[in-house]
Image 1: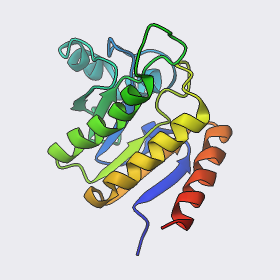
Image 2 (image 1 turned 45 degrees about the vertical axis):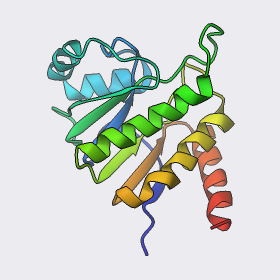
Image 3 (image 1 turned 120 degrees about the vertical axis):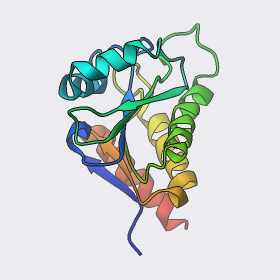
Image 4 (image 1 turned 30 degrees about the vertical axis):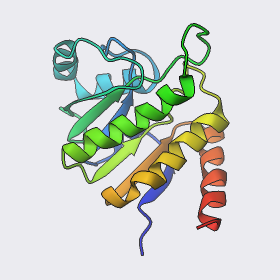
Length: 172
């Protein structure tokens, strides 16, 4: 049986899938990292559609078209800023990013989806926390999808994901 969950290293904006998930800023207007790359490649139409969404709260998810991306849709979710001590329930909010993105994908009949390492860049989610959250929730949702890509941009994340995934699959 083919594996539903695949961990890859690369550029999420180049994947031909039903939806990619954007590690968005709360304003949904583009920014740095994955968010900036997605907005740049998708084109101005993505920004125009995002403006109509009036932002997104931590842990929530919203969907747009993919425009000039190979992905048909973009699911935008906002991870908590791990370094911000005024934010409570950071772990729960991070889990909600994944859960709400998967739930929105299911409602929109998405069968192939790609996630970046949510919050693990400038928002400073610890690599072990981000890895475990991403993979554990992917296993909870794999039955609803043909393919789930967990896309790592940096080597450190990729090796952490591969190692934890191996541990989890040895237990199954």
